[in-house]
Image 1 (cartoon, rainbow, N blue to C red):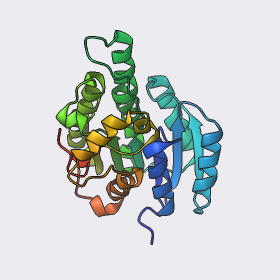
Image 2: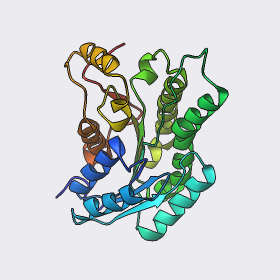
Image 3: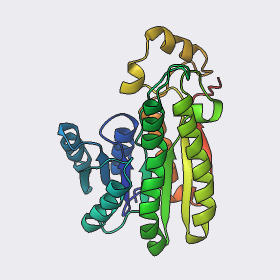
Length: 248
C-alpha cells in the first residue's frame, strides 16, 4: 500500500517550485491532490495532467491565500469535489527583500499577508473539516531564516518566524482531536525564486553549507511526505530544518 493512498491533500502555491514538487510526490505515493495558486493558468493545467498520470484525482483552483474570504471559499469548493481533506500544506509565499532602511510599508504588509496571514486563513478554514473527521496533518512552510534571521529579509524572516510560533500553538490546540501541525524550515533550495539571486551570493551561501550543495525541491518534498503520512503519527509541534546543516 502506498504511504498516502486514500488521502486527499491540499497544497497552496503549487504551480511551481517546492509546492509543485510536494504535489507530485504526494500523487506518486497515492494521494488525491487539490492545489491552489493565485491564478489558474497553463502551469495549473500541466500540473493537473502530471498528477493525474499517477492514477489519482487532481484539480487546481485559483485562490488568493492571503484573502480570508478566498480561503474559506477554496475549502468549501474542495469539499464539494473531494470526500475529505486529510493534509494541508501551507506553501504560498513571496519575498520582497530590502534593508529595513529602504523597506516600504507595502513590502512589509504584502510579505506578512501572503506568507503568514495565509497560514492563519487556510488553517482556520480547514480546522472544522479536520475536527469533524478527527484526523489531519497540517504542514506549514517556514524557513531557516525564520530561525536564524537574515540581513535584508526582516519582513520575510518575521513572517517565517511567525509561522513557527503559529505551528506550535495549533499543535497544542488540535492535538487532542488527532490533528497534527508541523513546520518545515528549508534552507537554500534551488528554485525559480533563488535562481534570481546574484551568482556571487549563491556561491557564498553554498560555501556556508556543510554539505556544500544547495537543496532541491525534492529534498523538501520528501520530508513533507513523511509528515503527511502515518509514519509521523506521533510528531507534532515541530519545526524541522531541511538545510544541509546551514547556520548563518
